[in-house]
Length: 200
Image (cartoon, rainbow, N blue to C red):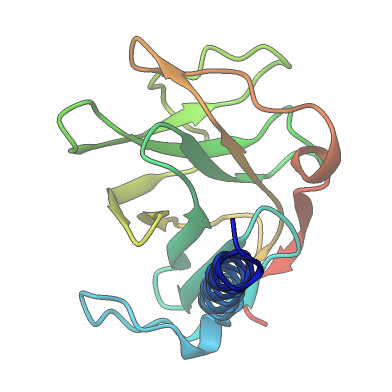
């Protein structure tokens, strides 16, 4: 092979590699910008509006809410990044600071693409994750999936023990036979809890 032909092939290879590298950077930046969108700038497709919101510190999650003093109820929308095969949940714990005692709402996509969303009490470190009654009244439960995230909507209340609660959020990568499977027990998955005042 002549030197000129070898140089030409090398030049084309370098250009192709550089083009791929630049495309990867652009895609990464677009993903970062999308992921970094704060809750205050988010617009729900259904044009729902919530009075307050918080970008949660782990699991790429966000909580939106409106507290209604006259009914002592709170309307919530919990959003979290997830694949079509995974699940997410959000809960408040009226009796403790961790997972045990949490009154949860869990959501995931069915095989046909429709959403399955329901309340489930967390009474142990190995909960059934099946539908069950909560100790806090909950209504208007629904969920959507879009843009690689699951959103849970619900109304909780009346809240008889004030407006400050410990809340917990979680996610897992697998659903088997309609039941969410165990989440990771390290890293962000064990850091997803804090105290929240719905009046804030």
